[in-house]
Amino acid sequence: MINLKKLLITAKGVEEIKDNIKKSFSNVKKELDVHLDSINQNTGEIQNLYDYMQEIDGKIEKLNERIDDLHLYLSPKITEHQLSVELSHREQEVFVLLYAAQDGISAIQIARKLGFTDEMVQRYVYNMIMKGIPILKQYEGDEMIFYLDLKFKDLQARKNILKLNDTITSQLMDDKAL
Image (cartoon, rainbow, N blue to C red; front, side, top):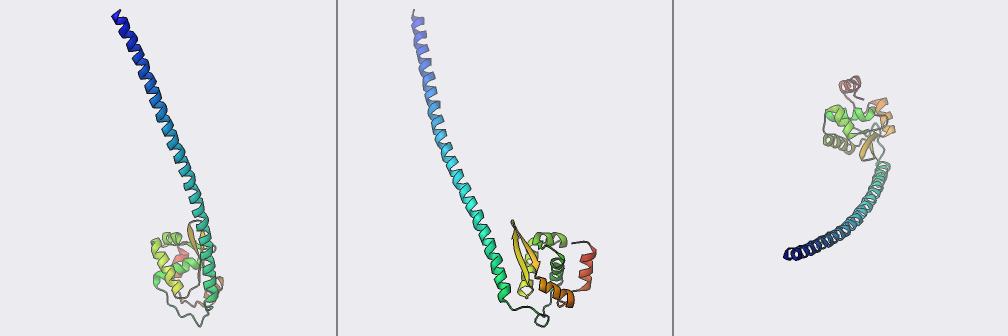
């Protein structure tokens, strides 16, 4: 009889323990659900902020393009007589690739073709802009694409006002670097 009472008490204890474990897991599940809801809300906010940043980046790119256009418009037009610029050997190499690119070319593409780093190419392009060569910039996605002003390109083709080294020009054109 004593064993039967112990079994009944033990069975009740097991049931209580089982109920307590179920309640505990239920409470843990509720807490995890609350955390999951918070995470989902934060994820939504992060996505909205990312979308907003992308929109702002697009507007900044358009503003940069307009500033470049204004700069070219306000700067004096370059003519054969006004331009007495000497380009370094490396700048000439970059210029030839810019000149030959029909639809523009990125600094990364120039760097690959010449074996330079992206930063070197950007520095050479910046130096040429500072020397008065009208290089236009435009963003396509995340990449900045460089173009030569068409009037300047035509003037260079007719008069070779930059006095480019023929060896550099022929070497880059012959290597099918373009």
